[in-house]
Length: 484
Image (cartoon, rainbow, N blue to C red; front, side):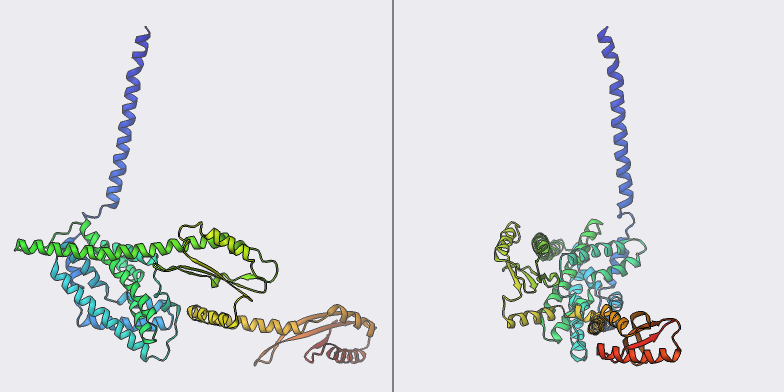
């Protein structure tokens, strides 16, 4: 009987388990189908039209050359004027993207002729861009180091990611039946090929080759990763390979294209690794600062100037973490040593040199040199804030002026009550006045007389009080008014 009971329960349990598995498989199948429909791009790709459009954008002659020259001038003027809108306009009309896509496409489909034409046109475009920008900045009288220019001299990992994902978006948009123009425009703005080349010309024109080197590094990053993204997308979409009648030639070209692709990927991988290491170093350095100097409490006049902190990553040398503290109070040596020990707890900061510049410890010449160097480094940011600084200086001047006019109102009112028996009340305020040539802040006393005092007597009393207050406060601008 017990067997019958247990045996009778096994079948329903097994059936319910099979149904759950079946439902689960059905759910997974539905999710897989949904994702496939959502992300699948091969079926809506027009390989022939995409290849033709990319190849058509490679040649650099006639109209394209003039468009490039105009875009260089526009970008140079925008960078010089520190105008983001003008720089964006130059990016939109620049034809530099064509040869880069051509190189990625030709490597992916083993088209050695297209690769040769792409490299030749790309080299001519780059040289012409740099020469044009150099001549503009060399001959143009205004050559300020704007923030738009200096932003192109120090690439980091974000520039690598922007170039790679921008390249992916661009090729996917070009491959779609009915190209998405807005994506192409957006990628032109995001990857920013033209501004770095203009900055190369600027650096050479003003005799600062390190600006040119940094900008060329950024341009190289953009070029390599846009080309790499193009190569990967074309391979993923399985564009047909170029066929050659001679099988031996076909194999040779395939090898050359593969080797070239690998050679391009090696610096791309190295660049990504290098900027990624720098990013990790700066991240740990900031964490270290958050746990040390930023929580340190000065007792009196000391102050940590965080915007002067220098975090410099050196790949084959000694990285630097430098802090600046101002004021008479010095951070004790034992605390600094404790921070050095804490620094060594971070894996990427062990070899970094840690130093603190404090008031009183270093001589005046060293301070002057440091401030001068800092000014040059942050000159663009300072230029952007000139107007703010001017307004702040005016405000400080006004405050300083008013501090010199501080009125000891409590004492004045007591003296007025003792000297003028008819005074019923006294008020004081600063009043802003202008003769439409300049503004001035005038101290104004408002006096209220006792009831019953004649008008003529009030006028005499006001004159006497005005003379007394001007002498008492040594201020000839003050005014005494009668209030009812």
